[in-house]
Length: 490
Image (cartoon, rainbow, N blue to C red; front, side):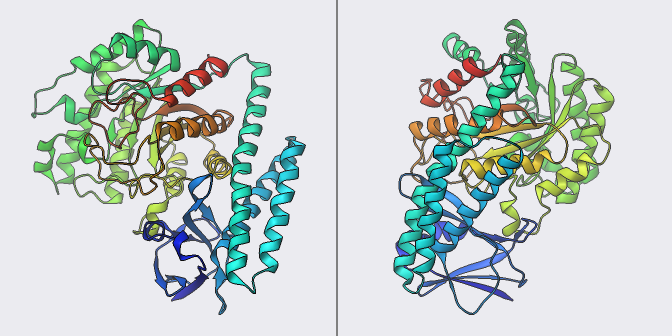
């Protein structure tokens, strides 16, 4: 049994909710199952292996809110580490490594921002030499984080805009698909115009649960009308998922066949076939499968989910060989593996990418801040770094976003995931959008970015993540997206 100990001189900085979401990863960044507990003024992290690793924990920083920070690689030792010092060390280390990568790519770093990075390093040095007084060292390290985290956002955003400008020098505007899910009912005239101002692509979902409430009785009228509207307004269409491993996406009657894999596969195959036959030629991108990581459907094992995913891809390619096919993975950082035995999404995606199934791209579903079914919040540099990791698989990326605008309970949300960070507001949702969307658009591998939920006035998966509130009023994030589309995209 391996054990890493952290001194926590300022106990008020670490909450039970933070401890619940924290985890360790190895050098390959695969999360380990571990047990965390407070023991007096120490945080103990126990796991089955005793290898060196990095510790990840959601951490609150004044002026920045809660974000997941990562230590440098830590070995086991008798003397405990000071948690704030190690989080500051890891944050600065990862930022400096990223800056070094940018320089190797001959990306110019603004002199003012590089000078601030040197100031952050100097501040951290003070914390390191003060470790004989853990409380003071922790205070100095926390002050370093307060300097460093705003810098990460400014650096990532500055370089993203520079990269976008370089790409636009060749083509006036980016051709990235930029869209949102149209939801479960038709848009009114005002909402429709706002959508057209903000997006060049529409996502038309086809939940089996909505189409075939009773077995054998199918209603395609809403989907037909949405396709007609998109065609009339020249929008590109991303449709699906054809198969979504989520209870709310399948009809209740399908649970009569729970445990009968052969019958379930037959029913799913027939439904996927009907979707493709009906809308072939009207779709620009098919999402073949989604929620492969955290989805819970019919007690299916991960192996069964993979078999059904492969079958849906093969069938889609047979029926529509011309339209690009993507498979979408939620929790792309793989946090779930710290709580249950499971393959890392990146490894699952790598296997599919190498399988010659004809996949044209990979989707990353990022449901930001929701727990346990979402993705932990991270700073912009770490976000860009993760996009780089996925781009190494050699396939274009589709980023699917869900970002909250409030933290309280949402009676229309179908999923039980909660938001431990209580700072979310419409203004913070908009600020996140302005900072992070350019980071995605600057990444050449990212060919599409879509917003997972457009509206809060109809049943939805995640709380308060729409761009139109419960009264249909646009949130500030929609204005931010509209500005980005007007300035950068066709």
